[in-house]
Length: 466
Image (cartoon, rainbow, N blue to C red):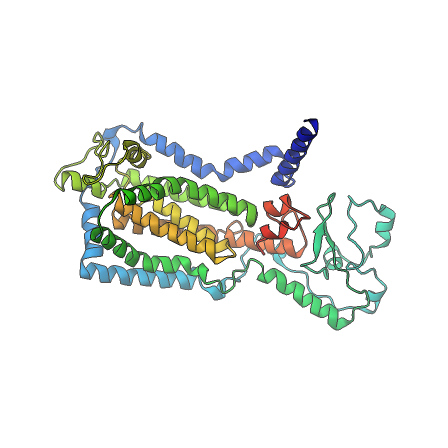
């Protein structure tokens, strides 16, 4: 019993040590608060809605979304003009922000020297006399080797960046007592100039290919989604009109609209922290929080009624904030448990938070982050299917217009583009910092939480995004 308890204590200490990653606990907690600040602000605003006096709330629009949805999706002229506008916007978005040829464009930094890779130094006649870092382990302060032997292996004329220049990127391990990477495949110290130069080229190529997403056509998801979303929404709507309504379909739509809406962002956050660049979870949290705050403010300033209100009361009834039009109401042709409807309609305190759709925006943001970071196509395909099913469930439940879903796509792409190109802090910036840390063999800044948790095991490579 005591042995098991000791093992649990050791594992807990090991887990927390790798989770903190050299940070002090107080600063780690502070980072969590800062990273989730926008989500906390969103939750506060949701609670604030309930205390706002009704006389200070804006007028509820009960025909605008109905008319706008009909003009864009059912009118030939409106359909054509809207489609041309989306194609034009997608082209501008692609040409300015998501051009695959510009993925490797340097990001400006406050300290540009931080991103400069060490230049290749041609071998000199003294190179054979100096100790070769490939055949001699790197000496660290944690190493049992004495400081006197360490000083004998270091030349006063060789800088730190130059002395580690020719370490092979792929061949390293982390000792149990040090955060310095050790070479595991020694190369002969008698390498000629051509061999050293070839090795240098491989090292220089490796960081630029890892996490570069070069020619990764999934990075075109934002402009492609912007172009095709209108067409997909039209066919989903036609599908709901053509096929009969069943209890089974309602349950499926409820699962995606309610359960997956809350579950998916949590799973994406865990996946980003375990498998991907340090800081990706922070940006995902900030992205979701920012778009949620913007959408909630839109709901407060510009309230609209959903399709269910029109079906129940028609176009002429003027809505007010005292109405509870969805309470306990089920569709006329099927009967489902009341709690399922309550979980759909009571989740938001504002009954007229119709335009745009928050559920859809969360699904789009999750898809964009998965397409940006995932190495395999399967997660991207699953997230695309999840998005389509979110669209279908929103329309099937009569809780949103097609224009609401289209607006949700706009909001998510706008926020994702801001976060991606956020100077010194965005997705491109943290990806580049991660590459440079890997080039310098900096395990602390160049590893994921999963890599640190399973370091020196065969599972470590599984959590390596490179």
